[in-house]
Image (cartoon, rainbow, N blue to C red; front, side, top):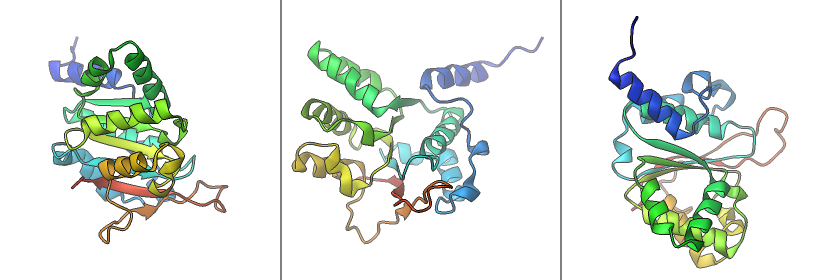
Length: 214
């Protein structure tokens, strides 16, 4: 009988702990359906992952159905195979968990648990309720990881509409500053993600590659 190697067992354990959808791999993502996303760039991010050391972030904006979650899961599976620790979370669920930790005076401990991961995925940020308690704990998480750990954020809305998530304008601007380049940055190369087939008439959001905060 061929027993799996220690390395293979470690990778399998990390995949299980990550919360990633096991079937959402890079090999099953239809890049042809999303021509604005560079397959070469995404593959490079999975292979040359020094961007994690810089605390750079991956930002994917677009309407539902374009494959944002699939793409970030596929990238994360590649990173786990390379020995990195990744955690997938539904943003609203994580925020509610952190709110409960704050009420129980356990927020520093919860943030310390998240700090062990090289990449934290905040899926569906747009669904966080525009509520002072929810948006403040989300901002506290972003600020805690700023320039030390990487985030992968998927959202239906671009930076210009993050005021729908964060209650205070100052908090909105600070969150944008800590997660990606400013909207008026002349070097901003974010591209539009097209809407899914059957929704071509809708307004697409923006897709961002990894950005390093200044």
